[in-house]
Amino acid sequence: MKLSIHPDAIDALVKGEIGAPSTILGRRQLGDAVSIRTFQPWAKAVEVVNDETGERAQMERLHENGLFVAELDATWASAAYHFEAGADAEQPEVFGDPYCYPPLLTDYDVYLFRQGEHHEIYRKLGAHIRTIDGVTGVNFAVWAPNCNRVALIGDFNRWDARSHAMETQNDSGIWEIFVPGLKAGARYKYEVRSHNQGYSAAKSDPYGFFHELRPHTASIVYDLDGYQWSDGEWMKARAASDPLRQPMNIYELHLGSWKRNEAGDYLTYRELADELPAYLAAMGYTHLELLPVAEHPLDASWGYQVTGYYAPTSRFGAPEDFMYFIDRCHQSNIAVILDWVPAHFPKDGHGLNYFDGTHLYSHEDPRQGEHPDWGTMIFNYARNEVRNFLLANALFWLKHYHIDGLRVDAVSSMIYLNFSREDGDWIRNEYGSHENLGALAFLREFNELVHAGAPGAVTIAEESTSWAMVSHPTYVGGL
Image 1 (tube, rainbow, N blue to C red):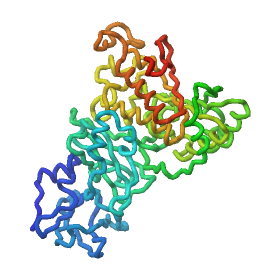
Image 2 (tube, one colour):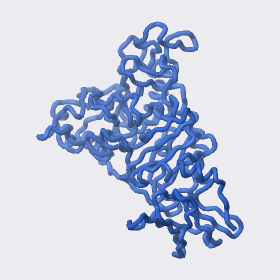
Image 3 (spheres, rainbow, N blue to C red):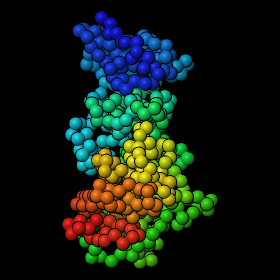
């Protein structure tokens, strides 16, 4: 018995407009009949191979643009399988079926994220190497609630948005796909298509751990768990310390400005690690404060216009190289503070701005959402998922990169709704005043989470006005 597909569904698939690909693709069973379908627009021919028996079946081309189907018997109902496909004289490519795996995000993950309380959301959103039923690959997940279609594109699918359409569960706004066989090093983006006036764009991963060197903007699959730290004693001592009762002599540094090699190029993280910590120790410094190292497209910004909040910039090396740099600093008894930028983000098309065809991370009204001096976008701290993105990011640097403190940039621009604005160019809060209540609540929660989740870490406010009790603990009314 053949399982039919509605022509409209096929049309949406081949046009790259389908929002629920598993309703067409993957494996389904009706009685004793098993139907397996795959969409490979580049392939001339496709075979499906039973991993348990070795049986092979030539798939029928159901649509000229690359929809293939195999009608099989019940022995294929639960067997693992893969595809082998070729184009002209090419060697066949071997790949698994992304539409025969369940979503990895649970309802509880979604609930916590919606509440703004999933403090390890970076373990679920983004790109993560996973093993499911003995099959290793990469799971991708991205928050884009105002899209009617999100597709994974990359060098593994010829950057063709029709090949890996993602799925969203219920009304979570999170799109997900598992790509069996994919490995670290793969370059990728998300192609989003919005409900809003047909907006479409290729976006870097907001939770990506590694990105291409500018001017390129793709994200790169990376496994953060491979580095073996050697600073166990340092971290143990930090957790037991009280930074308020210890001396601090801070050396502020932009990594690209300290030294260059003979060719005039930046030193790498590892080259810096071989020189900088020893220099700081010899000069009597206790702390190194780094201007922002999170990925950013513009050198002239010194890192203050971030597009990759979860990735150290690739200008100086890979994430593991940055871990090595921090490790070496700790071995020289140098604490590391990062300048952290939760106040605003740039308008670059591959970044957070207008992420799903709406002002998802900012405010729609420019009187709230756009910074008049810097031409950047202001985070919407009142939106739970945005607050979660930033709070989890702070903990991420402290826990996964062993950063010892965060210096929060541009606090004044966060806490005043009328910061650098003329009368009539800003919107009052619910009490008719100029305080940004969402930003104040965010900063208090940030400090409470940092001190609870990373004992001994320090937080510093770059605040240029006279706001009272900025550096006081929240339990006495401070920020």
